[in-house]
Image (cartoon, rainbow, N blue to C red; front, top):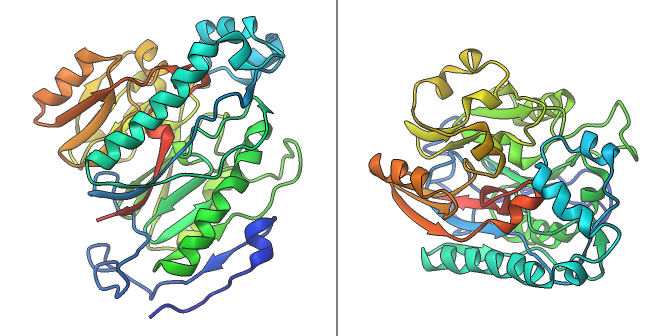
Length: 356
């Protein structure tokens, strides 16, 4: 039986805090969602549980305007490759579709193919609302970051980069539908001040990994911050432990340095961690496929975990796919390279709603 904790329409369509349909208190991740009476649930207890329903981002053609590309931009985005900056420099202050029409089309096609691949594996896919007008340096492709699912909570997050914050509104229709129809809790983080105020609280889905009651949050200075970690720990309560994972400055998110395939295996770039020897034990004792920093920068660790024995990886890295297969994992390779120019990959492009 659902109980309403708080539901505010104003919060859904504007700023504020939304928290709806709180579940009964639970103490065991193996039980807290299995006893629900509703057939629709918000549930993400482990990165590798069977994927049932997701949100996949969009690439809308003729919607991306390239910003001015200068040294200040390079300093602000240290994780973008030189090749990407040279690519964007050619099209600065113009529409991407005007300068690179075939690429604009390919960005769209790659994302739609990810949707078809997931649906072919039995996964239900939701999409955010479309960007209805061209925007500068903002896409709707990376649904990982503006939303995150932990346990029975679906959270609308606060993103760091100011130009990306306008993406969040396009996920509120999904949030409202989940709040009305799903067992679980829908939450919107408290609103930040404009700009990059010292008191702002940042939390992005690309930095978060869910491993039962252990939550790993990457911090590089490019996205999530200490205040975001503190907010998340308070929101989740004492049953959870939120671990800060310091990353090198040139790393955008934790999923640009690591992929957890199951409780024992994964893909990693250890050099992208400030001190891998001091990460939590849950990350140390695994069978890792190790990649180079150069490979990690173009999303070699960034894939989709369908279940603990099935993943989707970019076909850009056949040697990595082979090593993953050698670990006994089924690998579906698909083309997904264009999004890398904007610092993202396959994991960046989806966010679970329900894992079994």
